Image 1 (cartoon, rainbow over the protein chains, first blue to last red):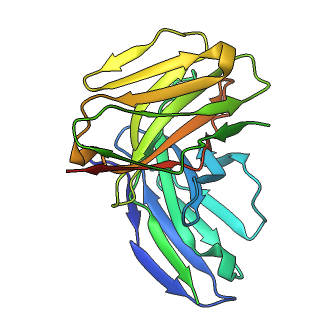
Image 2: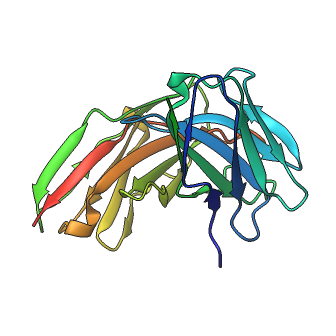
Image 3: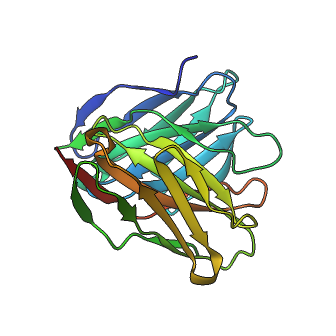
Amino acid sequence: DAGVTQSPTHLIKTRGQQVTLRCSPKSGHDTVSWYQQALGQGPQFIFQYYEEEERQRGNFPDRFSGHQYPNYSSELNVNALLLGDSALYLCASSLERGLGNQPQHFGDGTRLSIL
Amino acid sequence: AQKVTQAQTEISVVEKEDVTLDCVYETRDTTYYLFWYKQPPSGELVFLIRRNSFDEQNEISGRYSWNFQKSTSSFNFTITASQVVDSAVYFCALSPSNFGNEKLTFGTGTRLTIIP
């Protein structure tokens, strides 16, 4: 039973560039959430995708965008990268059963470094 | 707005000692969920427990136990007879319970080090 997988593991970019991070949810899960975790901090919610639409969004600028595909996999795109975007980006998946708030299962994350 | 406070930044205990990690939360919601996650050095957040605000019963799972007190807005986590493998960063988190609103609000975490 494959868990949440994220790619790439590590990424180095320079300011102003654009980046795409990818996530495959745990088998059987249909909802994907993205979080940003700065060093020494707790994860901060970016947004959540369900049925290929952004269902909920945290306090992140429009430079952060995403997509969910019919197979439930998801991408996080960040444009015009800033030094402050350096962080661990975590993807989490869950199964929407109409009950809400099912435990979210996390991947190992993508470590993004901006030079 | 929701907020989670983990006042203990770092804790070190000798192996086999018991240790309690504190979590205090703030929310205006009448119903909500509370969670604990473990983050080992690999980075993956490992789900430990989810508790509905309606259920104030304490829970025990092996060496782990959780004490939920709604009156003090606390959801503390105790590890009994700690082991080196328990070393990690532990996060307490909170989310609303209404459908379609599953944003997790995390605390800043407590780094637990178990000394052999």
